[in-house]
Length: 465
Ligand code: BGP
Image 1 (cartoon, rainbow, N blue to C red):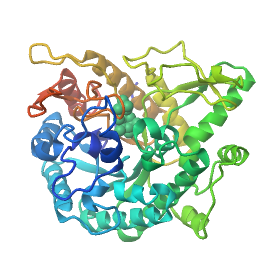
Image 2 (image 1 turned 60 degrees about the horizontal axis):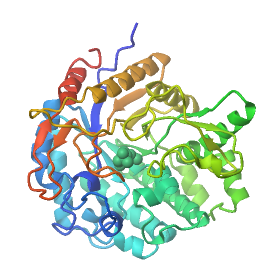
Image 3 (image 1 turned 30 degrees about the vertical axis):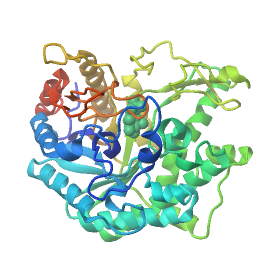
């Protein structure tokens, strides 16, 4: 017998500012590191226009309402609110998000707001980015502006999207900014500074918005040992600590996961704590854990040479191995999508069970989806592959609910087509297709995909169809 979804389950969908909004330099917006670094990168599709959601937001929200969304998870562009990151507030940027949030409320859609999704203001990056402790205070100040402006309209806040991916894959995502390929000791100090910033913002939120809920949103996936060889199990535990649990232990318990800390110490990458950091970390408590899930990872014991790194093509840096820590292994039990990502719905259930077991905090899935080359045939997009992917993941949420896990929302990636983090506009995730001619980005017409109609039915039946 299937466990029913809670009546107030947040059926949602997800986007981020820089991947959808466009209007990159309009109405006072300052440049972000995506504008200064990724726009220039060859072969990366256009972030300046993206899905032009900034100008199409009303149409988009009407479509989200037609889809039946109960929640919309999006991000606010820090440099639209504070163009240089820590200076004056830009009233036009603030006004845009008031319009968007008001439009969502008019349609009964709960806003779930990410405060920072990869797009650090370029002016802060120029001053050292997350290596500069002033960025910590700038983030807290930005958060205060958001809480003051939108606190009476937004119940769910997400601090930082995928901090672990920024740390592990910053170059591919474009978040390393000026530091380029900084050494790992610098990167892990930035990581620490972000942890402190996040902790301060969670505490601030609770101080000034007692009704609001706030949590982090790392990318969390189960790590499987490649075999039952004990060495493989050790490698899986180590990688799980470094990739996943470090980010949640610090957010929930205020401490570094012991295996992750040992790893950092042994490498010589352990960050320096400033006075007050330990207290700030210990004082902060998230209300929930948001996590993004695409596929699991399977790892074996390191062989200590470059063969640890073999698994996927050059652009598939998502699974890459680390000499001395673990070897990335292809999981023969799992199919892959068009981009080589393994598809593992059951892995989402194990991820939910493990998170619940370790942290006992309510969970919301803030990203999950299938990137594909969609085709328009007679004005329609028959994305049955996406329907199949989402259906099988939703079944696993239902099973996790049956396991006793507290899951209060599901926001697949993505509500509308947008620019992929590093694989261009041709890789699509949306329920809503965006008609793009890369030579002439004026059309950008919205077309409902088959998955739109299917998801509408899922939401309408509260997951029973
Ligand atoms: C996550 C990011 C998103 C999104 C997604 C899909 O890491 O939070 O911003 O892009 O991955 O990844 P990609 O666009 O590379 O397919």
